[in-house]
Length: 240
Ligand code: ADP
Ligand code: MG
Image (cartoon, rainbow, N blue to C red; front, side):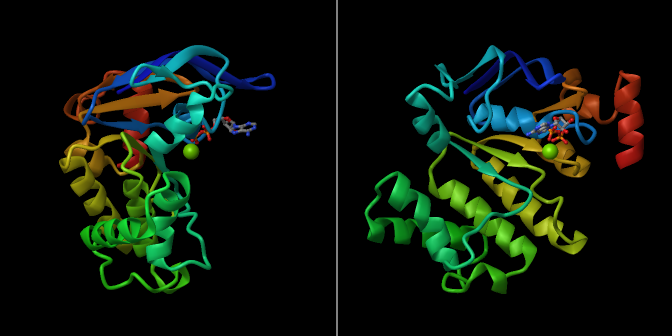
């Protein structure tokens, strides 16, 4: 589904991605962990074409992610992103937030988009909140709206960038539970997270990124339980 092949990126003189490669198969959940500033967000942003990369290639179902090519519009609608900050439209209702993409980007008829948005919101536990505005919701509820909005695009994959990092601790669980359901339904997911229990339970593979390089990767039982690299060991001691 997603092939990241030896990508590099720098900001001016600062090399932030230094030859990163990994594949994500259809239905797979890959978690990316690593210290702040290691390049996790940059990798996600390169995958859906929010950032350019300088060397290597990223392919989504065989199509190269090239921000200058016409194909980039399709890739951006096929690969949804959920951010740390929910980025909802404050003046639109919950239902309108979820309908927006399908109606304006995919030209889905309004009535159909509304029905589908309501069904997805019901699935994420917000069936009773369709007509309220984001400010009336808790952070956890807002993030569930953001996930519903991503799902409404019927994406091929969803990229999550620390989706629970901005939440009060008691709200983290409800968001992780929704992500778990989405994974269980077979969605292809790349998840940047510090939630090791989620990675342990849901990820097929964990990548440990440091200074723009993947220094360790494998199944969560191996990378999280028995890390081989001293940097991974040190990081896990600090976060767990
Ligand atoms: P992470 O998500 O792992 O915390 P990022 O991908 O956000 O890391 O950032 C990787 C590095 O790139 C950091 O050193 C960060 O300061 C730098 N960086 C990120 N975005 C920009 C930018 N727009 N301009 C300059 N430097 C940036
Ligand atoms: Mg980040």
